[in-house]
Structure formats: C-alpha cells, structure tokens
Length: 260
Image 1 (cartoon, helix red, strand yellow):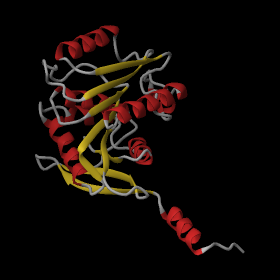
Image 2 (cartoon, rainbow, N blue to C red; image 1 turned 90 degrees about the vertical axis):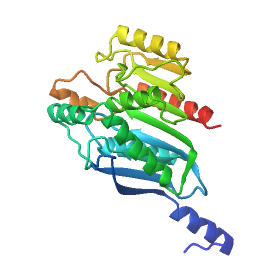
Image 3 (cartoon, rainbow, N blue to C red; image 1 turned 45 degrees about the vertical axis):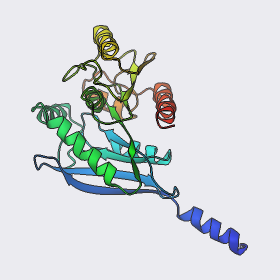
C-alpha cells in the first residue's frame, strides 16, 4: 500500500489528470461548406499559448494530420488540424485524393476561405493567444500554408513539409509577412530543381524571410510513416525516419524563435 503526504498526493493527482485534450469541432466555410476540425491542447499548461494550424496532405483530414496536432499540443501549442475538403473527408486512394484536392482548389479563393475559417476557429479557442499564430502543412497542405503566406494571411510563421512550391498566386514585394521554413526531401521527384530555383527567386524578390532545408535521400512524404504502404499504389513516396526527426526538430527551433 502506498502512502503520500497530503501535498504530494495533491501534486500526484494533478499530474496524473493532466493530459493532451482533443476535441472534434464542427464549423463552416464562408460559402457554407460544413467542415470538421480536430483540436488539441495540453491542459497542464495554464493560460493562453501560441496557436498553430495543421493542414493535411492530399489524403484529407486523416489520423496522421490529427497526430501532428497532438504532437504540437505536447510541445505546448494550441493546435488545430483543419479540414480543406469538407465534412472531414479523407481517403487512402490516389484517385479520390486527387478529386478532393481539385474540388478544394477549383475556385481561386476556395482554399483561402477554408483556411481562414480554420484559422478563425483556432483563434476562438480559449487556450489560443490570437496574437501568436502559425501554420504547418504536409504535401498539399505545405502548398496551402505557403500560398497563405504569399497572400499576406496574418501568420507569424509557416512551415511546409514536402509541399508543392509552385504558387497559386505568386508573392509580390512585401506580401509575405510570415517567416517561412521549407522542409524538402532531396529525392522528392514531385519537385523539380527548377521549381526550387523559382521559389527561392520568388521569396527573394518578395523580400521574404525564409529558410530552405534539404534532407538527403528523402522522398516526397518523408514525414509520414504510412508513406511506404501508400507507395505500393504506384507513387514515388516514402518515409525516412532521420529526415522526419530532423525536420520536426528544425520546426521546433523555427517556432521557438518566431514566438520568442
């Protein structure tokens, strides 16, 4: 039988109850499209904290995107994995993913409207400091967060993991207010060297503060442990543990500096 002094018992009880809290939140885009967000925060932390939007891969709002929200919550952030496709749709089939992505980007402002709806939802959470906001995205989501930075969405910093670098609307001088970090796999066959050169030139001409980190031997999708299984459908993607861990550490250092 264990015995605790009253103070120690209270501390032990509080520690045992503290945990990452998660919640599904229903919201809507400006055009009325029903969306489903996945919110995560650490209830052991008192007060408001920086908020980070997580934008999913082209597979949709799946378990991987939700896991990253929990990971961010564990780092002390208020994190919301948002829904870019509507009703929380997700798939493991490339043809379906392509169709979902094309529908979400069919209108010039559709993607931005859905991102902004998620950002407003994150700002409304009592744990979020609305003056300290960032975003991360994977694959399709990486392109989304870069496009939001290009379009002057009020974010302190964005991180793109193996994201498409080709802009929906190119940045213009002074338009990129957010700091930018790109985590790119050197073996990513989805991105040409010319795309990289064009992106860097675009950022320089816009006067953006950006970092471009390359990870040797890493393919498209290198952060997702499920990429190897998904690759069996004929896609040139793959998980790389070293690049995953290095890019996550780089992201942590980036946001620590952004929010200091």
